[in-house]
Length: 482
Image (cartoon, rainbow, N blue to C red; front, side, top):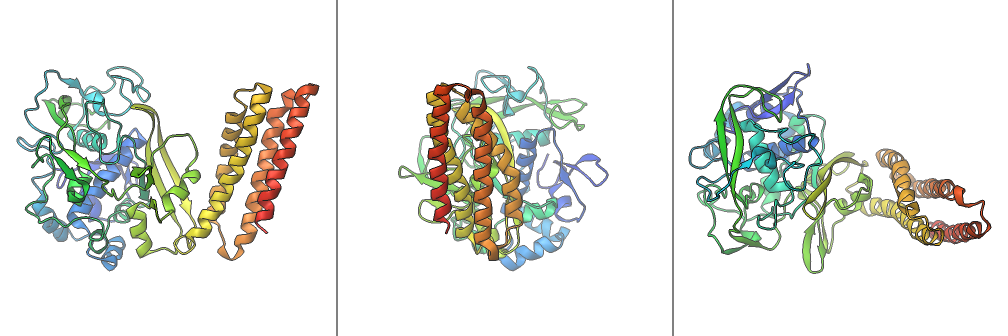
């Protein structure tokens, strides 16, 4: 299967009929398609793979061409001409240089194909599977997704296996659009923008890792990685084992005549990369003199992450796709889509797929938007801190965590609606309304959680003290807005 020419993208069309289409059909037609798989994390991986292939083959030359690509489907001739140099690079079952694989891997054991999919029964990550052996065969399209996803977005299999360039479990960020073709182009950097952030490698040297691997045991700087090599970085040597037989794929449910059933993987460390490669689909921040990509570490809702995504300045870098889109259209509202895994060390606890709205004018009013969201976070944190003391004095171990869970659950819809309808001319009014709404929510929650303890004189006094000190803190916040 050739990812440049063959149908591999699993979609549902306007009649909800599921099938595979090629990248060429997607980019050269106006048909309304939706990526359709049984798991949303793999749907985002398919989107990301389509974006990355488009990025390396068909990057618009400047902002004007980016807009043109959005407005009209691509000409088939333009696609074919751009794809020609890459035709031999992205063949999943190539006899010598298969996509993101290496032939003749030195491994004594084979591993079932199921381990290529996050949330597997083998090892510690079994949270997304119902039973062992749920995936015994994967079609070439889903195998390509698994290889790309495992290398780009997932925790390491073990300490022996190197991870991706963004660390073990990054948050991947997209500029969202309901139209799949538009969705892809909104996340493809034009060449004028990309040249400011990535090295320009001569075409005959810009070769992906599975075709020309860097020397084993050597150290290379991240600044040596082009967009092609970085987007398709593969740090583990994997060799798929294929079987030819009819049937349907256990992952996508679509028919295929060929399946990957197992693989060999070489755990030995190969070359090392120093520094930080600026992956265009991630934000990062400076922590203890090193850059860290944003990851899911808590169950907090999407709006809590918006400040870390839109902030730009010393120690904070926006996702390049967002910065790029800002140069094209910073006045219209947009929605960010985010995906990833919440993990504990290498164990996956849950998968996340979130949507976060940005209001019209977000590009010109970033500081005000940050102030508004940080105001909401300040109210939450004051509430959390005061609940900690009450929890300790009452011996109610779950009170604080339950209070914050209710705060997040009940504030999320309101904050999203506020962002979608934000009128910058009434910013002060919006701040006051947000403060009053969230403070009222805090009082509502503390009333609910304290009610079982209020009938005892000793605990009633402790609750009254907490209410009094919390009221003083909320008063300070309100006075600070005047």
